[in-house]
Length: 227
Image 1 (cartoon, rainbow, N blue to C red):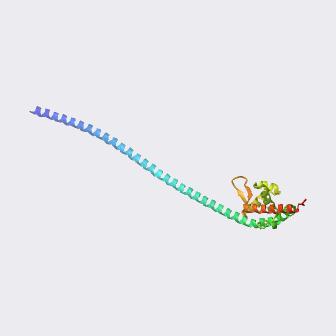
Image 2 (image 1 turned 90 degrees about the vertical axis):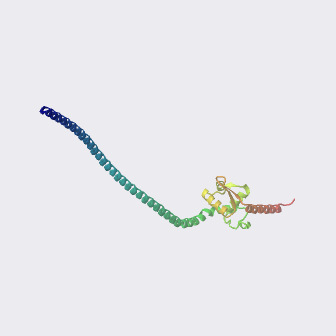
């Protein structure tokens, strides 16, 4: 009986020892798994912190970049406004300068023009066949040069300003101003389809010259001696 109890006790102790070994193995395995999970969580926490730091830095860099862009836009806007003001002020200065110089130029032209024209106009006035006062429909023709130009167009037809200047002996600038005056006063028409422009007499002026030529021919017929 005592031997049976002793053997049963040994078996129980052996079973308890085996259970303890199993429990120890399970605990060790569980501890390792917990340690692994803990390490993973620590690593994940570190990564999250690093990610948060990088995000914060990115936000900070975005804010810095935005601030720099705003400053650059402000500088560009100020530069554009300054350029506009400079252009407007320079335009006003140029306009005021032109307004001041125009009367001087007109005065100088009016004072110099008679000196240039005196000798030439005296010669041209002798060459003009038809006096100005005889052309009653041309009241604003006041110089022999103007009458010479109209006579040239009446006889030879349309011509350009350079061609007219060569015939009447005037500079290109003087001829251009003269033809502009005659065009604005309605004595000539301007063909703008060709370069340089060609000028011709309007019908009213052309008829006036034809009538005058007819009168001159009648006078010549009267003066011719009859045989």
